Length: 389
Image (cartoon, rainbow, N blue to C red; front, side, top):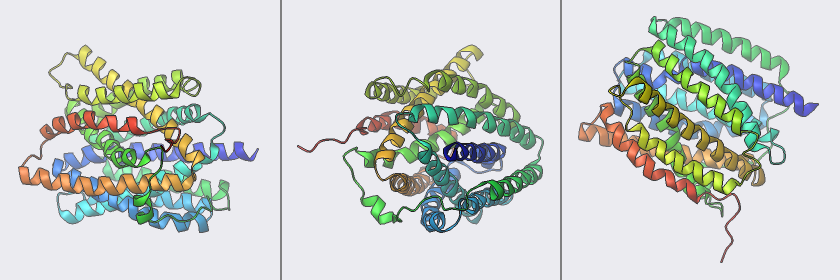
């Protein structure tokens, strides 16, 4: 009964945040592009977000052990509202980029770490793929509702209304979880420092995979989002519709394979998923408004399929390893390594873009090709520890 109650609470938390993310945080890269930031600005913001994520982890750990779960959930909604509020100051001024980057990093740090910890606690025996598929389908529904509302509002110049709507949803959600969530803390694991995380190595070959994964997450959530925005002719409402249509395939894919991925040859599935993921980055280079509508739609659907299938296979492997290796500690190590590396890496890339004068979206094509090559690093990830010779 307690596990059932916790499952319901997890989905309520996930649904409310997915709706809030769809309203504005999802649109963050294209919104910033629309107010005059170039690729170097957005890349710098991503780097600042990564380093701020690491700072948020240092604050999250003691709070998640000492505060009740309901108060910790309340903090995530406050941070989301601060992120939305910071977009009112959006400009290419360095202080504005830093402000949005810091609020974005802290919100992501608290929300995603809380969400992943809750998900880890729900896992049973060999059901990671099914459970991850279920919650991705659930996320898709609420996220896309938020995206449609957010796209229409931004296209109509309704940023203040989005802030008001986010405040209402966030306030009601905070009240709900103060009533329904547990008075106990989320976990009792020991704190892990940034230096401990950076020094971590294991026989699953987690480290090289963690170091590159942050890059891919932001390539998908920010750079690829910008590419789709250009396809929508920089129209927020049209962009939202394109994303929602593509999400239908996403949901269908997870529904079809979520119950079988736990039973088939996991090693083969993972290798196929990585190859398809690399292919998706090559295909992204071909996306253009010059293609016919039918070919363009087919190309976008294939890219969505490959990316979605890979994320399901990767997250199944990650959470299976996490469940068997120090649980929350493994989650924190992954976040520290991914976010610190991408933080420093994207700040460096931003400087290189400025020095080369390449600040337009034309720079995305070589980045996508580099991502295709870098994708094969994921093949190093082993579900079972590598035996010492």
